[in-house]
Amino acid sequence: MVSDSVKSELVRIYGDSALCKYDLFKLDLTSQLIMNNDEFPYIYDENNQRDYLILDHKDKRVIEIFIDLINQGYVKDISFKISSVENCLVILEEAKYGQKYSLKLKDLPDLSVFYDLDSQDDHLWIFVRKDKNDKFSITFEETIEDLFFDKNEYVITNLIHLEVTRINGVDVISHIDHEYIIYTMDTYINRLENSGVKGEHKIKTFKIDNATIPLDYKFNNCNVLYHVVHECMSKKNLVKEYFENLA
Image 1 (cartoon, rainbow, N blue to C red):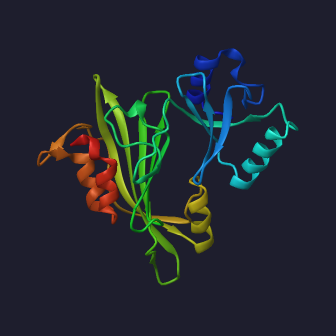
Image 2 (image 1 turned 180 degrees about the vertical axis):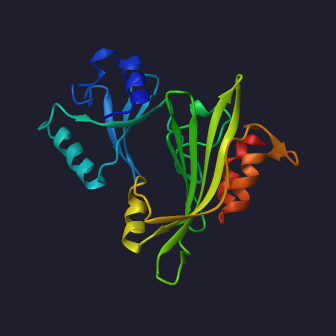
């Protein structure tokens, strides 16, 4: 099922006929193009203010087949599950896709991925989720080429998770924790291809609950969230790049 937020956005842009009974988005082949770049497939809409409709994860080769069949005229009716709707898909120098951090959380995409220009297998993944009560969940996870193994050859990654709640009109960080996520090698390889894959175990190093930390609070004249993520992650240049707009 497509998420409620994505469904409402599609209906807002295209009307009640945007989705079929399976909640799949049907392409208008006269104005919408399937794009299949090196990182992820998406639909580009030429008529709706350059809106980008991001496809749910599909194998790149399958998308290539679909594009060829459409170009040959063999397929004239095709629909996809949509994972998010973006007004502009930002491609940055150090970002595979997504955009930099903003205090306007509702404007952030569901997923942003930044990589190190000098070590292009090193990534910082940022997941943003919103529930019906305007509560945001934000997760930072780094996957790096110089893997950290434990004695049993499990891969270990860094992860910061926080929750943001609106209290009296102010966005506050109500929860934050740090975890080491432990993957088997096979699971980790799958994780690099599919951001939805979960690790086998996790080890928490700290956890804060029931907090009321203003989202824009500054420690030593710098955003407190940036400080926490920067100190907990190994790829500090990627953290700095993601939070650059808070300067």
